[in-house]
Amino acid sequence: MKRKIIDLRRDTITLPTEEMKQFAFQAPLGDSVYGEDPMQNELESLAASLLGKEASIFLPSGTMGNLVALLTHTTRGDEVILEENAHIRTSETGGIGAIAGLMVRTLRGEDGAPDPDDIRRAIRPQDIHYPRTRLICLENTHYRYGGIVPPLEKLRAIKRLAEEAGLRVHLDGARLFNAAVYLGVPARDIAACADTVMISLSKGLGAPVGSLLAGPKDFIEEAKRYRKMLGGGMRQTGWLCACGIVALSPENIARLEEDHRNARLLAERLAEIEGLSVDLSRVQTNFVLLHLHRKDLAAHRFVELLQERGVLATPVSASLVRFVTSREVTREDILEAVEVVKEVLR
Ligand SMILES: *Cc1c(COP(=O)(O)O)cnc(C)c1O
Image (cartoon, rainbow, N blue to C red; front, side):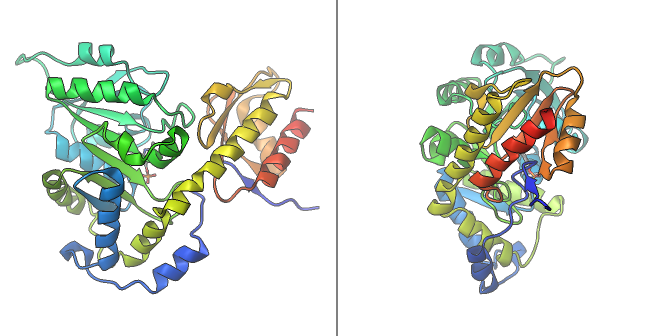
C-alpha cells in the first residue's frame, strides 16, 4: 500500500487555505510602490496594530525583512550583538556582512537569548579603535534551538539595558505568534521588548509569501528606501497581502496551538522509544529535536530510511534530527510517523 507523504521538514510547506484563495481572488489591486495597493495598506496597518508599533511594511521574505532592519538601524562598520546561533548569522547567506557591512559579536544563550550581563560586557566603550556597538538582535522563537521561547523577563531586561546604553533592539520574530501562543500573551507584549520586529506570514501562519517589518513611523519610512533598494517594491501585491490578512486573523493565529499539540504528542511518543531521546522541556512550540543514540545509525541515514517510508524530516547534525509540525500534518499523521520511526529502528 502506498502511504501518504507526511512532511515534517518545515512549516514553510503550508499551502494557502480555501478562505485565503477566495479572499485573494476578489482583492482590489493597485501599485504598492506608490502606496496604492489597498490590501497591502490594510495588511501593513493590521500588522502594526497587532505588534503594537506605529507602522509596518510588507516584504517578500523574512531574510529581506531582517536585512532591511539591519540596514536601517546601522551604518557600515557598526557592531551588532546577537545570539551565536541566530538565524540572521547562520542562515541568511551572510547578508549582514556582505550587504549591511556589519561586525557581528556573538554571545551564547542556551535558552534562546544572550544573558543581559554578557551583553553589558560586550558593549564597546567609545574608542577610535573600536567599531560602534549599535544594535542587539533577538530571535523568538529560536530556530536553531528547536523553536524554543526565551523567557519574556530576560527579553525585557535586555530591552531595558539597551535603552540605558543607547542601543536599538531588533526582533527576528519569524515565528513570533508561535511564541505568543506558547506564552499565552498577545504578540505585542513580546514585540514591546524590541524597537523593531520582523514576522513571517509564510511559516505556520500559512500564507504563500511574505513578511512584515514593524517599528516607529520614521524608521519604517527609511526602511521603505532599503526595501526598494533591495528590489522589494512589488507593485500589485494585493493577492499576497489578502492571504496575509487572513493569516493574521485571530482564528488562524490561535490555530498554531494545534501544531504545538502535535509537536508535543510526537515528542512524547518518540521519547518512549529506545535508542533515542527528546528533551521534552525544550519542546515548546512546533519543533521537535530528536537525539539519536545509535552508533550504527547516523541521522542522515535515519532520515533516508524514514523518507523511504513516506516520513520527511531534517538531519541537523550527525545525531540530531528535526521535525516541524504545521497545518499540513494531522494528529493521525503524527501517530503514523511514530510507527514509522519504530519500524526504522527495529
Ligand atoms: C525562516 C526564517 C527567517 C527568514 O525568512 P524567509 O522568509 O525564509 O527569508 C528568518 N528568521 C527565522 C528565525 C526564520 O525561521
